[in-house]
Image (cartoon, rainbow, N blue to C red; front, side):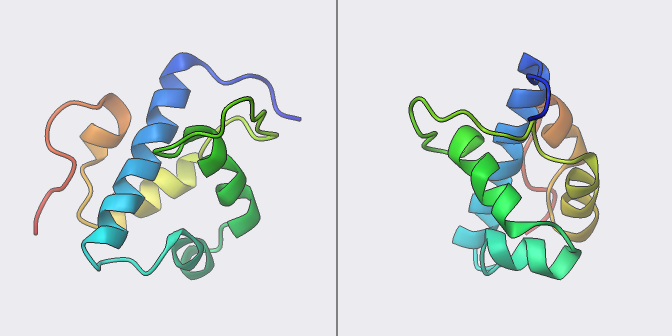
Length: 98
């Protein structure tokens, strides 16, 4: 089990899942699993993380992972219209272009 994440890292992880959900809703991404498969991330890991940090966290769920990997944040901001500044700080608009 990973060490407990900081509040800042928890917030960043929540923003990651909010951005993925927005991209899925907009039809720019098929699913979280598709994102993982396309970019070499573990889909089971990210499904577990989503239970802890997604839009509707599972009450009482203890995630075995500390948070979203930095590489996933980089991929999201580099390959999709998601603001890196927003991902890291929560400031400004989520999407960079439509």
